Image 1 (cartoon, one colour):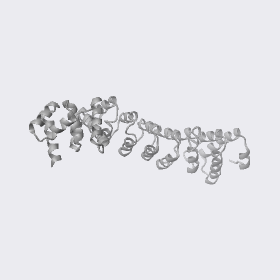
Image 2 (tube, helix red, strand yellow):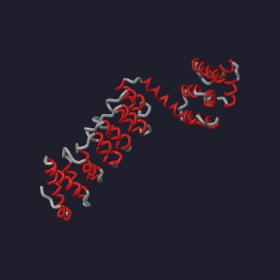
Image 3 (cartoon, one colour):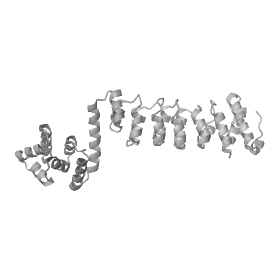
Image 4 (tube, one colour):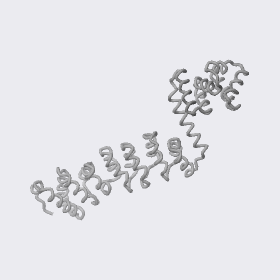
Length: 314
């Protein structure tokens, strides 16, 4: 194939578009290293053409080549969406590690295109989860052909723990490790929580326990360094929202947050905070029992509270 570089530079857009087809045909069949090197340089020049139409034509023609120099392929892959899209959706010239290496340098549209491929490797999946946006990771999670190992799935959960739509999509995958199921059961909607329980044999009791644990961790983060007045206000909000549970009270007490327990008992018993606090810490068994009854605490829960009081005094 004989091409005059000067004529190629001066050629009009249509001529260059036609040339991309000739370059592609040659690169698809050529085994002559020296001649191939010349044509690859022609392709490099076309890949840098100022006319988007020329670069689009080249990318489309080269998308089915089984081999391209890495610099040429990378140039096309990092171009604008109309150029890189068809190429990235089809090309097989990149190894798993090579494609993963490009991910940090690609824009969201390219990440989405790659995330939808059916032949992704684990390294590329990891790179997409590390550098991709929620949108691109969402496409990856919905791709049942994507090999998402436990480490990659865990990274998805850690990066997007509060994005319920993404967590719902993740829960719909058929290949989740049980550790991931446990991690997301408190992050998905009720509908998908039921699906997890059915598909992975997670009992509703276990699911509820995970939910309670997650709620307790969140509350503890908010009140750990708060003063008693702030804690009382927070407990008041929880009660108004009907989220104040006995399990939550006991958990906060066992973590050493007595103001939370005092406020919760005051609300449950209908007493003032000062009265509930005095009865709780008086050291008088009769007053303690009276407070537990007024707060409608079970004998087992009252026993737990008593043990917490003893531990705090000790």
